[in-house]
Image (cartoon, rainbow over all chains, first blue to last red; front, side, top):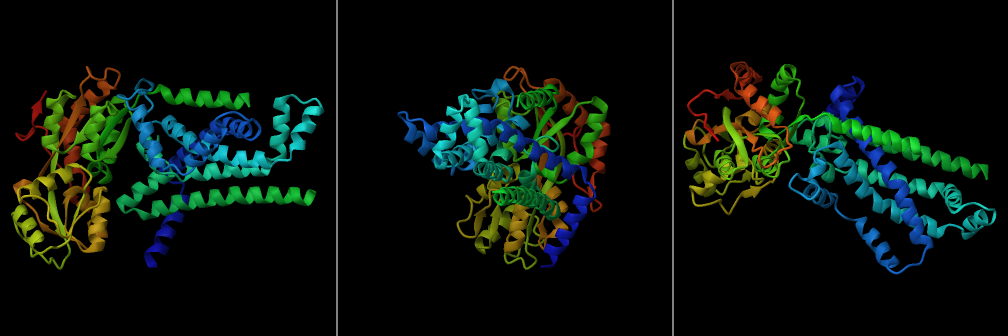
Length: 233
Length: 269
């Protein structure tokens, strides 16, 4: 018990002393995750909407595929991406391996199935009249889509939060395509893996606390917004 | 929405501009703190930013083969020679050495303490069926350990465990399980005060551990940072840097012995 308390105290000290290395790691984590969500979210929601509303051959195969990809191990995504992006791989000319962009691509791939599957469930459960009313009132399909998304905002926000959770805490893919380079591609999970290897548990705990605080903050905000709107009804 | 995309695009292109030097090296040089201690001097002199990817020697050589690193700092002489012979490298230069030590629990069930013959010590560990943790990750240390077991006809069947992890992690595992393991002295010194393990066998010439810096063949991968790699190779072997390596200490103990100009340093092309 004693080492747990002392490392936690050391971790607090590290966080509040503004340790530059620690904060660079935190920056990499949130920068990559934010970029990945911004890129993946609009496309994934459109795909989710299309799968919910349109009927076309292969629709069920696609839905099954996205559901299966939900449980795809992150290290396998990392390995495939590594082989693609390696200088001797098919996309080697892009020179992306061991860069932040490679990590963003990996996280987009990991977030995409989560966003599609959860938004699909959301769109399927939506009241059909929202879309129809918007359309009869003269809204363009795009405008009607935005209205629909607004009505479904809590479900869609939950999809975004789940995707965020999958990629901010992911170590396998980031380690493989990022290379864990300090100040460039070392994010919170890969840093924790490294610090644990080095026996430096305090920094690992400090970074773990940042993740926990962020996750709590995000979920509390969502819950508060949701409750406020329920009270408003 | 459009402004977000534009900002994203700008952020992405800004990242793509600088070409830092990518050094693939072993966990023993990075986790011990050596590179963090000496590389700022290189950046100050040349203006070249370095990015360190710390993996096992096997993985580092593989990155060199596929053109995913600009320069390598590794320790597995046989594998390095094969790497050069296959034409993947441009130049290979000795930089420094340290040595391996056999560590184990204080109770030393195989009675290896004080032996000067590493192979004899392993034989006794095998005969006592004592637990031995192997790196199992194709690193330089793992290659050395396998070579030692090979002279006994292979790894023992009982008590032998492969961890598949870095040196620090393996030391922690051996410590928790009261097992023996082979470690480079650098990582051992960095970890010694966190562990109950003890050094039992050291000083055997077989346990010598030389490090080389290897630049990548520009004919294979023309668009790597070859100029930076050449500068790093030269800088590592200057008397000034060699002194920095000699001065690097953990708990007052030197970790590496500079050897760029010693007879043991091999140069081949």
